[in-house]
Amino acid sequence: MFKTFDAQKNQMLQVMDNDGKIVNPKWKPDIPDQEVLEAYKFMQFARTADLMAVSFQRQGRMYTYPPNLGQEAISVAAGRIMREQDWLVPAFREMGAWLSKGAKLSSLYLYWGGNEEGSKFSGAPNFLPSAVPIASQLPHAVGIGYAIKYKKQDSVVFAFVGDGGTSQGDFHEALNFAAVWQVPVIFIIQNNQFAISVPVSRQTASLNLAIKATAYGMPGVKVDGNDFFAMYRAVQEAHNYARAGNGPVLIEGLTFRRGAHTTSDDPSLYRTEAEEKAWEEKDPVKRLRGYLIERKLWTEADDEPLLEQYRKEVEKEFAVYEHFEPYKLDDVFGYHFTEMPEELKKQKVAYEKFLNWKEAHK
Ligand SMILES: Cc1ncc(C[n+]2csc(CCOP(=O)(O)OP(=O)(O)O)c2C)c(N)n1
Image 1: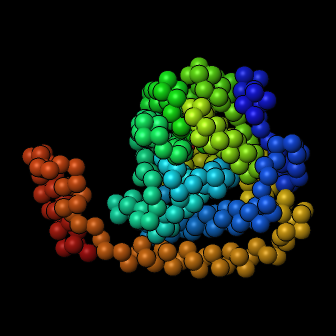
Image 2 (image 1 turned 45 degrees about the vertical axis):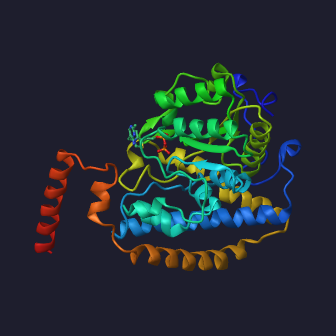
Image 3 (image 1 turned 90 degrees about the vertical axis):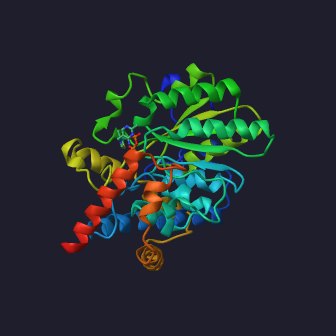
């Protein structure tokens, strides 16, 4: 795969077209129909939870949230391959991978509701919390990879980053060391084409992002990130490659963030409606549905009852978040130091004052 789809010629692995028709059967992964159907349902669940998160935020019931709309195939495909003993090192827009790893949806809502309890993921092993400081997660991923290799464990690290994250020093340092040490890390770039309002063309002069792998001495492949089968195939091969002790791999999943960067962003200021329409045609859920309908595994009419069931499940998980005990102020300020520094103590007093003021002005 890495040799066939040459990033230096800007070639891209793609298996199905915009309607879900298989156009490249040679590269279609060998997945039973039932598993494809499960993956489709999982994508729909992630999408429902994502759309509802935006709506909860708009109702003032949650804080800033980064929508996943349009990018679901990447993290769902990776999530189907990731095993319990593998590590997930996310950025912050990988709901499909989070849920596949066993995180509860209520944890995800807690996190975006500002409650650190949402990063505990009880029952979901080998899982780092979301990383909002862009690309800071990647050196950690390589460190974990190093430990896996040192301990001779059968485990692979799935490390995610956005296209904007590839401009950070952490990205380059991480890839460099991963290749020098030959550690089992799959770097997955979700190239959704924008870092907030900055397009990829302003991030890099490289032909694509997968090509960057060459300079570090690891295989890299550019993949249609809205094509579930292509993503599945790429991650599966990368997983086998890393497990066999060959070292790291870089996958660029080309996609499009159909929603806003976060709920505090207005994408109409930096992209056109025509662009948005064109990418709606390439939507990953629509494409996989097209495939399933063509194979008579699904019908249009099957969607609504499924979505209705999912909306109810999401409501329940959201209720867990809304009724969760509020975090203690001591936890916020006292978390990082055994002995709180003077400056932090002052900040705590000031914040307590503010909370009291807020309470009195309710
Ligand atoms: C180190 C750092 N610099 C700047 C920011 C502000 N910031 C938040 S998200 C973002 C853009 C990230 O873009 P990308 O890596 O493409 O991921 P995406 O949000 O598109 O998923 C920036 C610059 C940050 N969180 N961390």
